[in-house]
Length: 211
Image 1 (cartoon, rainbow, N blue to C red):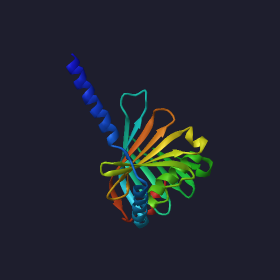
Image 2 (tube, one colour; image 1 turned 135 degrees about the horizontal axis):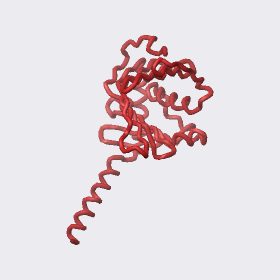
Image 3 (cartoon, rainbow, N blue to C red; image 1 turned 90 degrees about the vertical axis):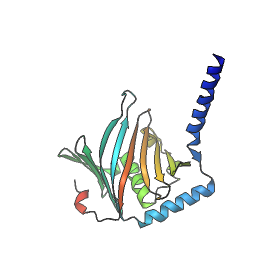
Image 4 (spheres, rainbow, N blue to C red; image 1 turned 45 degrees about the vertical axis):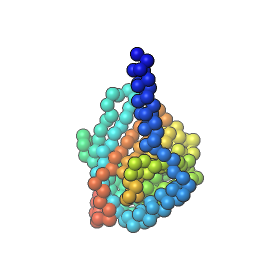
């Protein structure tokens, strides 16, 4: 019995160690290099389109809610999220407004009146444009993963913090572009968006940003 217990504890310790070993804090030099890599790549990006899968985790559900679609970015700050499955729904950030099209039902929100949407938009656009490492608005920590880099943003604004506890951006190490966005709410719920099949600097028609 004791032997089995020791074996169990041994493998448990290995599992815990492996879990934490996957995420290592960057050194100051590594943080500087990471920021430089992101900025160099992002300055070359004039437009970007990518497929995405979004996982909405709700604590009371046994399975995450999965949706998918396409995201489009065009400088300086045009952003469109087009959900295709399991429903048609699109959100466009344009000219200081959020344009929503829910199965043909259209509405608009002034970003100036929504601090949360404004900050999220700024962060996502910033992850492409390179203007995302704002120490004034966020407490930022940096980590290394296998083949990836991770930046964690904790809002300093008390109002925003009520809704979003932390924002995590995962970058492909070689490409220095975002491959995953994770929004952790003040509860244990979170939204995780995985980006794939990115196309950079291809022509994107302005009609994409019309809802």
